[in-house]
Length: 81
Image (cartoon, rainbow, N blue to C red; front, side, top):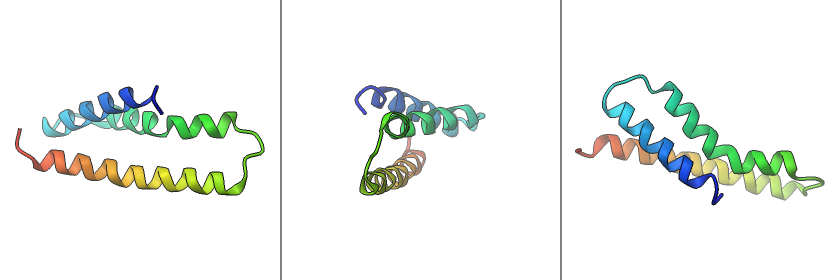
């Protein structure tokens, strides 16, 4: 999480900036999504014999985090520059 967080926030700022300027935002959205899911992807690839509840927690954290990130983007787009 610590290693991916700076890249996620940089990508998030890039995405918000592109959306505010009404520019193409596809690559910024893919970059933001990739850095958001990267820690979970690492656990999925490196984890061995993880109990089912670990996956439930990871999925739950990912869903909650995505909802919060989308809310943040929407708030930033509504706020004045």
